[in-house]
Figure: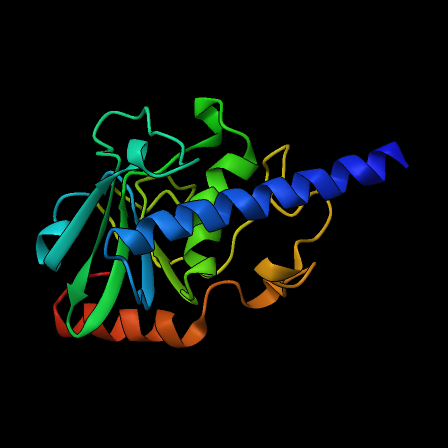
Length: 191
């Protein structure tokens, strides 16, 4: 009984925090984002330059948002237009290795979901096991294996955020990956 009460309290607290962060963003002009973008080190500056009419909010002003401790991660949320789409971009992110829990790492994504975003692009700079890859290669991910000891789906489901066990067989949308390949081919970018 105590565990059930604690679980309900944790869920209630999480929903409250997500809603408070969402309301803060709405009050500061983030009204109708269509696409979420999480920028890693490589695209943190270049992509932001493409955002028109930006509204820039530092993470430390957003209720319950973690603050990035990684060098070159600016710690800013940018809302604006890119090619006719309303974009909500994170310039810098949070990592499990920084000491954050998965609840904290995924908090901004849950805020994006609460704001109505259904499409999320994530960029990062990382290594690879393929010996033919070299620094600077662009890779479009089609699947991954989760080796983290903690998982963001752990705990009681929060219905407002989606299904208990999302279908992970199509995590990376085939249509969007094919579109990315076509754009890369058109622009002479090897992927």
